[in-house]
Amino acid sequence: MITRPGYRRDTVIIDSDDKIPNIRNKRRGIGNRTIIRPGSKKETGVSRAVIFNRLTVLDTENAGVVELGEKTLSKLFEVKVPDKTDTKWIDEKNRLIAKYMAQGLTKEEAEAEVKINKPLGRDQRTITKMENIALSNLNTTQKLDEIAEEIAQGRAEGTTDRTLIMRQIAQTIAGINTLSTMTQTELNNLKNMSMAAAIPSDHKTMGLAPAYVDRAYYDKNSGLINLLFVGIYTEYERKGGVATKDYNMNKLVKDFSKKPNGIPAKALSVAYGALSRPKAKDRRYLDLSAGGLISRSQLIKIIGGTPNNINNPMFDITDPDITSLFP
Image (cartoon, rainbow, N blue to C red; front, side, top):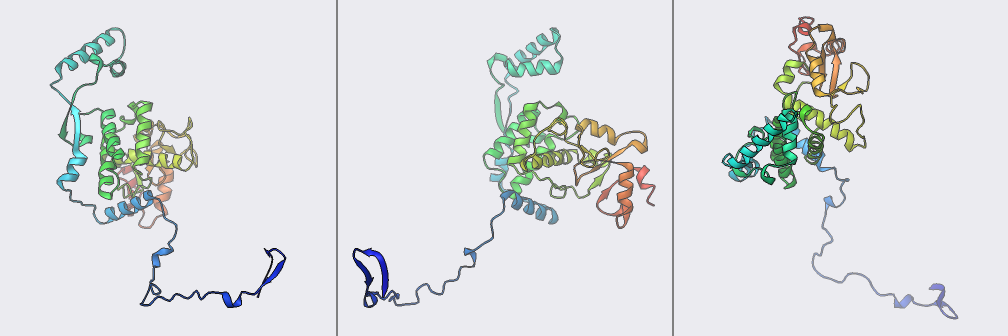
């Protein structure tokens, strides 16, 4: 017996007990009543960058040796390089550079002018060949443009491709002068490329095992360390941080020897000078886990409070001023 005052005008009681249909499913057979789907209620997914980072860690732990087929190799190493037979363009470029330098410009300024006012009104012709971008004769801008194109075409999706892309960028920006000589546009392109390729901000994921290193280690691994600084900075922006005069793509190396938060940061070339100071008490070392410089006294304190002190794998220090303190 159902009471619905507004169901039918002047009627408040509806006798429908005998009219309720049998809603039982009359189908025969096993039906789908026993289907179990454990994946129908899964936890919220994580970002692809996190998954990529975990896969890269596994690659590092498993010795990271990969075999590539011809198709993958052609995708990764087939690049456009300047055509040396485009002699008219090369002669015109050299003429313009000589002209600008005669007018008082430096060679770098003349090169920049040629990029804007192109010889013969065009770029130099290019040819396609199989070549590692980072080791090619392309200039830094051209190398980064080629790598950015690979990323845009989805060639940084798989773990193998991402590792190779990361290594190419690292080779391209190796050394202490590469980043310092890049234009602001080039630095912004590098930042955007790093974000798109999910460059890690963790030193172990980057393939750098120790956390505390000296200048000798930097000299052998400058490309990956430079890229790590870029990765740490892009992670800072990804989390809502903004570029300031004290921390930006020109000043990537934090200085923890001065301030607990490492700000103001230093330019890479300035940081390298701190690693190379002749007086031991003034010398600086790199904390790769935090992405910045620490002082000699800070490093000694960290080593002294670590099991096996300087023999712990988290240190790669060959500076005799430090190693002599821990026989």
